[in-house]
Every structure is written in structure tokens, then in C-alpha cells.
Image 1 (tube, rainbow, N blue to C red):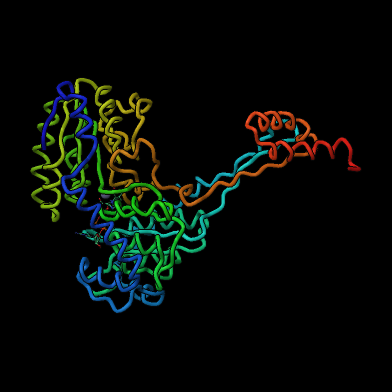
Image 2 (image 1 turned 45 degrees about the vertical axis):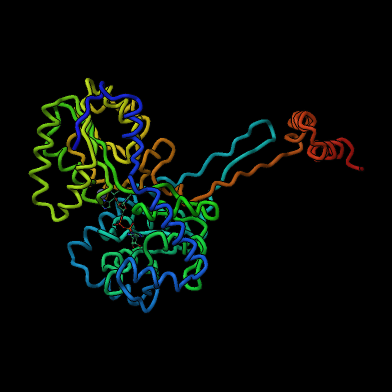
Length: 432
Ligand SMILES: NC(=O)c1ccc[n+]([C@@H]2O[C@H](COP(=O)([O-])OP(=O)(O)OC[C@H]3O[C@@H](n4cnc5c(N)ncnc54)[C@H](O)[C@@H]3O)[C@@H](O)[C@H]2O)c1
Ligand SMILES: N[C@H](CO)Cc1c[nH]c[nH+]1
Ligand SMILES: [Zn+2]
């Protein structure tokens, strides 16, 4: 892990650090373009070929159906079943509260405007499964989709090497009432959901995180399908002062580093002693991690920044716009107002990011690569469209008529003006 002093960083270096660029980004872009083109022209045949090439499995069928999901689901240990059930309840509670009816607004007497939410009818959920199976992501996408009321939920996840899906995913499918999981991963899954194939239906919006191939594919299909957010390789930025525990900070950094070699784990601290102690704790904890190699590479690509004050640390954090921001300080309250860019925030020394990854209730599908500057994490809203309505009474039309006529006249759009004028004339003289 490289160590920088914030005061010594040039603006150019800050921008370089915050860009998260990786040397072979262009190669990923080209490969994904090829994969999408192949799925578009060859459909299911391409999906079977890519499963063999990337997931090392020769599939007989492209999906697992309801009965088999139910059988697979029975195999999960009781302790995991209980944990999934508790996570389900907390995520459900938190997301259900997001369904709010908006008030009707009378902008002028007789002019009423309001919005009503409608669920997106057919959505596609991508559940990552290349290096780790993530039933938690299935909960994070499936629960808000159900609460929103989406009619048809298409689910894709890479196949296991036995040509099936993991039993935990099968259990989550039964909880959510989802009857089919398509055994398709990577960019090809995104392409299939965007264009549709003989087996896999085209959807209106694609949701879900994934590696660089998945994220690049979502970027490339945006001209024909909506996407939730750019949610790529996981990242965390921890702001730690002398009140933090270096062992906790190290554990939080490693929790995101173990997701993938391209994950980022950034420490910003006001204390050189804290940085040194955290780096030592990382070395110690790494030794016991099963995914040691992945986490070691991610940590090697990450860095620590020494800041003079917590305010300076926050300026850097806002420029970086992390997916996860952990305020590892007893003084977190005073920093909250200055948080401008972050996907999800974890406050104090007893709030590990893992809690939000799995079970506290908030959504873990969050914007990465600096997109927290413009995107929110996935929520019930992401599965809804808000349609505006308006109704003008006779009084309303009379009140607003002249304004609309004048503006239409100013824009030279006579037909727009006429739509008002003929109605006003009828109000004045109902016999015409
Ligand atoms: N931002 C978020 O909200 C969030 C949430 C959960 C997970 N994640 C991230 O999701 C990612 C999951 O990645 P993963 O790899 O484990 O699973 P994945 O399912 O995203 O990707 C696996 C697929 O990638 C494709 N692939 C792999 N190597 C390829 C290559 N060389 N060329 C073309 N395609 C290739 C294969 O089709 C494979 O099935 C991690 O980076 C994790 O950090 C992000
Ligand atoms: N940290 C991931 C989001 O970047 C989500 C996750 C799933 N499982 C464990 N963690
Ligand atoms: Zn995680």
C-alpha cells in the first residue's frame, strides 16, 4: 500500500488516484463489445459457448426451474437459512418504508399536479458469481423489486461447474417467489437481458453489480435498455483518527479487498501512527484469509493518505466519492454535514461495513468508480417510474390560460397556443 501526504499531492495526482483507471481498461471494453455483438447475432448458442469458455461448464439447459430450485434450497444448513431470513426481514423493513405516496399540489387555483409511481414491468437482475457466490446481492435486488411490484423478474447468475446454481441462491429464489434462474454470467448475461434470446426474455432495465466485464457491458447497452447504476468492483474509504482501532480499520479494508484484485481499500488518517499500526494489522490479518492472494493484490493497488485534519480528510473523500465511507472516529457526528459524495456511510468504530453488506437493512448495490458523485445506491425507487398527472378545472384553465398562450406565442408555436385559445373560447361561449 502506497502512502501519500495529502498536502504533497498535486491536483493532477489526486485526479489520477480518483480515476481508478486500470491499465487494461481498453482491452475489457473491446472484449465486451465482441461478446455483446456475438450474443446479439447468435443468441442462446453464444450463451452456451461463453459458459463453456468463461465458466468452464457445458450446459444442457440455460436455466434452473422452480422444482429444482426448491430441491436445491432444501440443502442449505439451518444456520445459513436463519441468517438469510433475518437479513431478508431487515432489508424488507428498510426498503418497505421507501414506498411513499406524494401529495397532490395545487399550483394555481384549479390547477392540480401530482406524481404516481408505477413499477417497471419486466426487470433483469444480475447476481455475481465469478469468484464468490453472493446470495446477499440476490436479496438486495430481489426485495426492492418485489416491494416495487415488478411483474416479471428475470434473474441471471454464472453457472457453477456442475451446471447448477448455488443452494443459497436457490433458497433466496424460493423466499422471493422467483421461479427460474438463468445460468448466464458476465457481459453475455447483460447482452442477453438487453437484446433477449430465444430462451431469455429482453428486459426494460438491468440491475446489479459485477466485475469490470459486467459493468462495462451495462455501460455499452445503455442505448437500448435502462440500467440501475454503475456498480463495479467494490471499494471502501476509511477516515480514521487517533480514536480508531487499527485492527478494526484493517479488517474493514480487507473486507472489501477480498472481493477482487481490482477492489480498492483507501485509508485516510490524521495520524501517521494509526497508518503504521493499520498496515501492520493488515499484514497480520491477511495471513489467515482464505482469499489472501486476491486481498493482497487489491491492497497492493490501494493506498493510505495522511491528512492534517479530519476536514482535510473529508475534502479528499468527497473528491474520491467512495462506494463505502467509514468514519472510524468517535467524532463522526461533526463530519456528517460535510459528506457530499459517498454511496453508503458507516458511522463510528462499532459499525463495520460488513453489516451493511449483509443484514442491517440498507442496500449494498452501490455506485463505484466515483459515480457516487451523481448516483444513489439501489432502492425501491430504482424499480419505479414516477408518472406525473395533472387536471385543470374550468377555473384552472382560466387562471393559467393567458400564461400558456403568451409563452407559446413567444416560442412561435401557434398550435400550442390554439389548444388553450379554443378551450377558453368555449368556456366564454358554450354554444360554439
Ligand atoms: N458495487 C457493488 O454494489 C457491488 C456489490 C457486490 C459485488 N460487487 C463486485 O462484483 C464483482 C463480482 O465479480 P466476480 O468476478 O466475482 O463475478 P461476476 O459474476 O461479476 O463475473 C463473473 C463473470 O465474468 C466473466 N469473465 C470473467 N473473466 C472474463 C474474461 N477474461 N473475459 C470475459 N469475461 C470474463 C465470466 O462470464 C464470468 O461468468 C466484484 O468485483 C465485487 O467487488 C460490487
Ligand atoms: N461489498 C459488496 C458491495 O461492494 C457487497 C457484498 C456482498 N457480499 C459481501 N459484500
Ligand atoms: Zn462486501
